[in-house]
Structures are given as structure tokens and as C-alpha cells.
Length: 263
Ligand SMILES: [Zn+2]
Image (cartoon, rainbow, N blue to C red; front, side):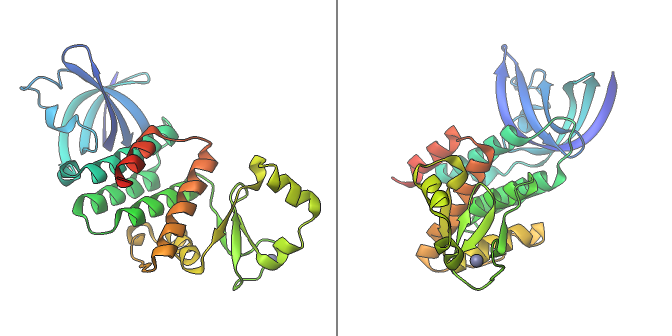
């Protein structure tokens, strides 16, 4: 048994017994871990305030083989303002579900943690539109997880300026000209809906914004503007489609978020 120190973000909370909670925490040093927070549901508990979803804290943990127990916790940021608005909270819940799905134990993933904290700060402050925070998170998370899309030039001919579609499963763009040269066989594969042929039309502004969100320094990920509503919708659609297809899953929290914003 050892005492270890790390910082981490609570992405999931499950009540356990009468007084305890099991926290899923994306940590700086140990990747995604589950940690028992004993007595965290009792009012006297020192861990009460930090044993909530979205809380980012400094931890001292007991580590016994692969099991962690919270010994001490000091709250750094609670993202309190997330909880004042159902749309913001629903989006934050979706980002946390993505993290708890892709995180790996014993694999520190500092970029993923920083990306998520960045997004939660932005949602909490209301400093950027939610579609922009969501899409930037999705496309950058895909890149961090090893599915970096090559958006700059046509995969076939290298042309940079032309209109393109994104070949979602292969993470490459293909220009109109090269698409028209596709063999009948390839077109047929697309028509029968096989997984290898999901493609999205990319508007120029959306493409530039996605390229920026993938390539820019992480702390500047939201420093772009996309004013046209059609471009915004295209950006949001492509980012979401890309991440979900790479992860080969859907998320209940995403369905919930969408059910709220469509009202
Ligand atoms: Zn081409």
C-alpha cells in the first residue's frame, strides 16, 4: 500500500452503500482510475465537496494494487456555473461520458485532461457558443486518441483548394474531381452503406475551423470564429459524426443533450 498524489477531474460518480461514493477520475499521473471516497455522502465528510461530477481537485490517494481510496482531497475548481443551466450541464455530462469511455487506466493522458478542462471552463463561463465547444472537443479528442484527420489536401491528388468530402472512416479528404474518377465498384460500396464509405460534405469554413481545432495549440482551441449558420451546422455535424464513428459507439448523454437543445 502506498500514498500517491495527483490531480484529477471527476467524470463519473456512483453512490455506494449508505455513505460512500465510487469516483471515476481522469488523473494527470495514472490515467482514468476509480477511487473509493469513503463517507463522502455524509455532511461532515471532508471529501463531500469534491466528490461530485465535474470537480477538479488535488488528491492524496491510498493505492493498493490497482485499487484507490481517497485519503485527502483539495478542490481546485468545481465548475459551479455548469450546474446553473441544463444545456451546459448536459453538454458537460456528454464530454465526461466520452472521457470515461476512452480513458485508460495507468495511461496518463494529459492532453485529454487539458482538453476536457478547457472545454468545461468555456462551458462554465459561457464564453463561447456550445456548438463550438462541443465540436472542437470532439474533433480534437479524436485526434488525441490517434484518429487525426488529414484535412489539408485531397488524399488522392494533393490539391488543397478544391471542395472536398471527408472520408470519415479513413480520416482523409477527397476532392470533387477525384470523387468523380472513383471506380464504379467504390461507388457501389458507398451506396450499400458499408462502414468504410461514410462521407460528409465539408464546407470551406467548417473545414478550416476543423483543421484549426486539430492543429492549434490546445489552449487556443476556441480562438476561431465561424459566423455563417450553415458553416456552423456543418462543423458541428462533421465533428460529431467523425468522433462517434471512430469510437464506434453512441452516448446516452449525447442523446439527452440533443433532446434538450431541440426543444
Ligand atoms: Zn483530388
